[in-house]
Length: 419
Image 1 (spheres, rainbow, N blue to C red):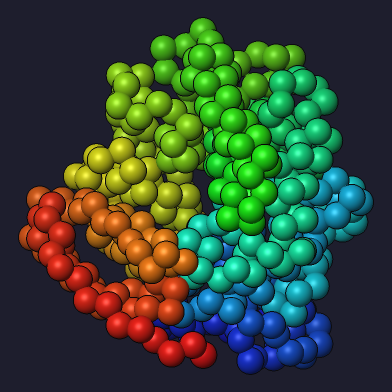
Image 2 (spheres, rainbow, N blue to C red):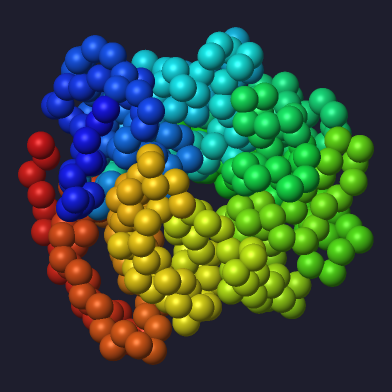
């Protein structure tokens, strides 16, 4: 069994240069003692694996900690795991040596898979390029094939029950293919709000990557696909017969509104809902109200870790900071799945995301490493007079930046020698 000590730091989770068992989990010690790839824990810290959903949410925090090679290795491992036999779904979980994590993989027709992860990996490939300037994210053949298949063949293969250009799950659970990150299955969704939101972001990212590769026609095609999908959502899929937003559809074509956790908040978080319109503002109020309800707030802290960025994106800084503090003040509480995790603060995603929240959300940094540029937009709440950070890694540079209230002060930048 993998042992977890009482004190944690994000660096503890790095597995680069280590050896250990395969397929270890909270009820089994696993087997063997093999060299691990450049990786870090992303998922339950008593499992010898990294998970696609967790990885997508942790990777910017990991980048800021200097884990560039780990991010590339892990992204490529997920990309390489998708093939025609899996209908272009990536694996949900991978051992630290790159092998399938067998708890979640029993064969190509029987493994955990959730639609949003397929698309988030495309979005995050582009996001990592913005932070690093590493052209492998654009030119690596395995990654480019994965991104291309995710936005084409994957959708075609998984748009059979309600043909409308939206990738579907089965409505039958995670081992058969779930439409949503919300595994509670309060409704048998085959299309979900987080699925369509992540598909939208994948189209946007793929268009940008194609442009950077010099594939102008392809870039225009997918920029249009992204724009068209947003219109379709806001005029049809998301708004039919509701004053708020639909969060999914069942196999009979019935729209489902109400509270769906991830399949609710991912829609504004990914920018799929229109920005400063009354419907979106009311929906953000609805999300906040549901989270304040003891009945509706998620039990697992890692789900709540998405909430600050959702509200920061929409300039609701006080609400975002409230939920960021909610997470921080509960780090020492027991996790909802204690046997696999321990405390909330022991769940790797939480610490990495808090780093991301501080740099990306509070300071409001948007990087463009290849152009040696960045932009900032302060999101400091009234409770924070100023925030200053050093050694913010953008490409081969380390940046120091300070914000006072909503004012950005001049920043310092130094070049770092390539490693």
